[in-house]
Image (cartoon, rainbow, N blue to C red; front, side, top):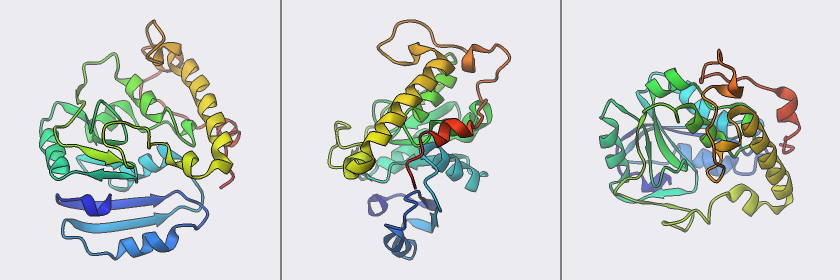
Length: 236
């Protein structure tokens, strides 16, 4: 990903969620690697895996004065012109989210006013899965302008036109695959409670307009259920 950047970037940040010291040295080398388009590289080694939503929130909070944040999976490679087009689309003040392809969240741009209105990502959805869909549920009943696909493409893993190379954590570490799949199922049940089962595309019906169908609950509301997260802990 790093060397596919071909457009000026003020801050390139990596929150190393490995939690086991397995890739610390490699990422430290990245922090001092020269790059003509990147002004500053920040590499932060987390003592434990905070999950996907936790890392995304750290990106936002670490650069809270930014007008937008581009958040990307680590195994994404941009084609020439992709980042430039993304920035150009972001100049439309009414656009809240820009996706790379087909509304996917493996690479996306999120505006600051979206966070102000719809909040940060739900860290109850540790370690991963559904955090992106949860965010989409918050504005599904609003007329938020989004760019679902860009003309320029990108690769996710070795694939450009499908997502079959995604979910690299469990693919590369079979020992924790069962725990990750179990956490995914628990997160889906949590989503059922938060938005109704209609959050799934194949289920007919309407999603709740507010979290947990509570009329006085703002859509930006998030909490942190420690016991729920502990039950899904991956051990690192």
